[in-house]
Image (cartoon, rainbow, N blue to C red; front, side):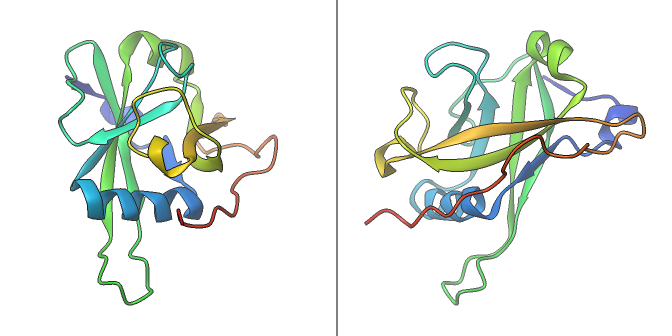
Length: 151
């Protein structure tokens, strides 16, 4: 298992929308610590797959892009801020190394094994090219959505 290089670590590569953060808080309450692996095309296309931390076995063929910073809910439910590691295969990272990835949440069911599937929502990636300074560029489309909690 490998992390991105020190130079690449200075570049923030992953972020999370508030809708996705709310779902991650729900999933953490049900499943404990979480992790993401950015799928390379199997099962649910190239969707980010959320698993209980350690359930998806990473290896030397994977790279840890960084950690999502999920803030506390602030709604009195007792949730504390936490992080969720995000992994991708080295082969895929070679193609996506110039992008910043934001994990978002939309209605609809994915076809994979990700933890959110039974809730009628799915995570997806919104990507932006990194600038020459290593900062995320402007989004090319709408980011974020209002997804009510599962009923």
